[in-house]
Image (cartoon, rainbow, N blue to C red; front, side, top):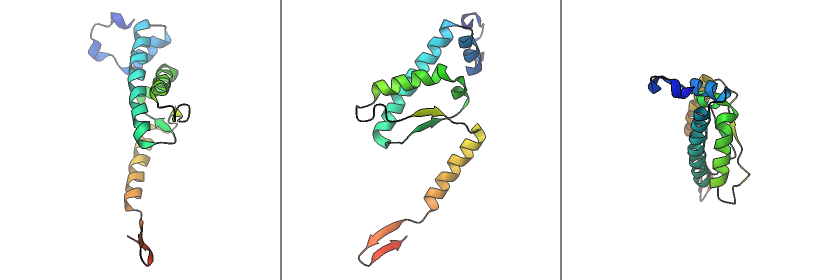
Length: 126
């Protein structure tokens, strides 16, 4: 199916998803390869950031198990033993536009929130 597309530059992730749903081997290999790369990089991210969970959003995550299964498998394969089986990876239930706005607003909130520093006289708000 995907092999028959004349101009590969016009293939979208939706096209790949639809082809995978119809059993196209090339489409499945695309998801496996992409998920493997993302899973490796997410494992790297876990090692230096210690997240409680990883929530992905965007068009690619709408492909469901086609992309999420290879991501989870590759991430688990590349995690240090201390992290194996402890970091859930899921797709967001928010609309993409809502997720982007909430993420940006959380950055503004965290950068403007007061921080407390220890002084000889006790705590001080800075």
